[in-house]
Amino acid sequence: MTAGINTQSHPPGEYLHNFPGGVKLRHFKRISCHHPIARPPMPEYLSLPLKQHVGDSAVPVVEVGQAVLKGEPLARPGSDFGALLHAPTSGRITAIGPQPVISRDHHTGDCITLVPDNEDSWHPDCQRMIPDWRHMGPEELIRRIADAGIVGLGGAVFPTHRKLTSNFARPITTLILNGAECEPYISCDEMLMRQHPEQVLLGGQILAHAIGTVEHIIIALEDQMGEVEDDFQRARRLIDDPRIRICRVRTIYPEGGERQLIKVLTGLEVPTGGYPQQLGIVCVNIGTAWSVKRALVDRVPLIERVVTVTGAVNDPRNWLTLLGTPVSHLLNISGGLKPNVTRLVMGGPVMGMAIRDDAISITKGFNCLLALQSRQLRNPEQSMPCINCMECVRVCPARLMPQMLYHSIRNGNVARSSDLSLSDCIECGCCDLVCPSHIPLTEYFRLGKSQLRSSLHQQQRALKSEQRHQAREARLKTEQARQQQRRLSRQQAADDRQQAQQNIAAALARVRSKQKNQDNEK
Image (tube, rainbow, N blue to C red):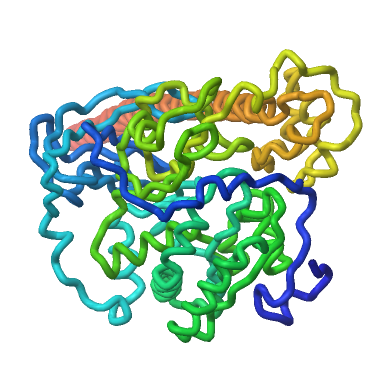
C-alpha cells in the first residue's frame, strides 16, 4: 500500500492508500463457492416486508384476494424517500399485516403475503421493449432505476435513485463499484462477479451515464480474487471503455466499508456526517450495478437477489433468491442444518444480525444466511472488566476511543459519548474481535446510539415545547397590545365625540348669542 500521494495529481485507483485500523480475518468463503449460482425451487408463499430500504415504509397498492403478475408493483413509497416493491412471481395476495421481520428494533413488521400460482406469468410492463439506455437522458435513466425499486444491495439499502440525484455543488467524477466483500463467509458478490462480469460492468456504465459527469469507473476487488480479476479484465477489453479501471485492494476487514474503500482508492476521507458525493464520488455495490443492468436492459425490476447460505449447513452455496422467500425454505434446499447450530445470522459473523425466527423472509438487503454452531459463539458470561490495553483504539477504522466510549455509555453519560464522536462508529466490530476482556463493545455502542437518538428526540421535543411556549407568549402579548390599542382607539373616539359635542354646543351658543344681540339692536 502506498500512502502520502497527492490525490489531486493522479486518477483514483492508480495508487492505493492505507486506512486506519482494521484486522486480518479468516474468510471461510471457499465453502460456498463450489457450485454456480442457482435458482431455488418456488416456495409455498412469499412474505414481503413493506420496509426493505432506508427511509419510509412503502404503502400497499394491492388488496387481499387480488391476483398479481410477476413484476407488478405491490407497494409504492410513502414519501420521496423510499423504494417500490414488486411481485417476485405471479399469484394471489392472501394477507397484508404483521409478520416476523429482521430488524434490530422490531420483531414484526407489516408484510404482503403472496401465494404463487406456479405459472410465473410476467406483467406486461416487464415485457415491453424500451429504448436503448444510451439514447436516454440522465433524468429518464434515474426514473427507470427508481421504477425498478433498486436499492443498495451491500447492506445499506439506500434507494439508488436518491444517491444518483443528490444535489451537491461538486460534480460526480468517480464511480466506484464495490466488490471488496471483506466480511467472512459472504461470497454472493464474488460469485456474481465470477459469472456475470460483463453485466456488472454494463451496469456500471449505465450508472455512469445516469450521473452524466463520470470520468472514472473503478472496480474494487480483494487481492485474493485473482480469478475474478482475470474475468473482469477480459470483460473490460470487450466493453472497451477507457474510464474503467480494475483495482485489487488488500484483504483486510473492514475495507469493504464505503468510507474505508474511498480512502484506499483516492486518499480522500469522507467528512464526519458527510457524504461521498461531497468529494465527487459515488460508491455502489456490485449487486446494485448488476440489478441496474437487469432493469434497464432486461426490463426486470428488483425482485430477486443472490444470497449466500453457508456455515453449518450441509450444502453451502449461493442462491438467486426471490424476495420474500422464507429462511426455512433456503435452509431446507441447502441440505438442512448440521448438529449443534445455536444461531442463525443475516449477514456475516461480525456485523450480522441474529435471526429469531426462520419464518423471516429474504429482503433486498439480505446478502447472507449464516448458521453458527455453539463452539463458534462467545459466551457473554466470559466478559471481564476493561484493562485499558488500547487494542480497540489500534484497530478502530473510525479513529475513535472505544474504551472511553464504553465507560461513558456504561455510566449513562450521553453528552460525553456524543463528545467522543459515537455517531462516527460504523459498528464494524473490530474492537470486539481484539478485546482481551471479551467485552461486547459494539452492543454497547448500539445502545449508546439509541441513547443519543432518545436524548436528541427529547431535546427536539423540549425545543419544540419551548418554541410553542414562546409563540404562545408572543401571541398573548400581541393580543394584549391589540386589545390595548382597541381600548385607546375607543377612548380616543369617545373623547373625540365629547369634544365634537362641546364644539357643536359652543357654536350653537355663539349663534344664539349673535341672534340675541341682533334682536336687541332692533
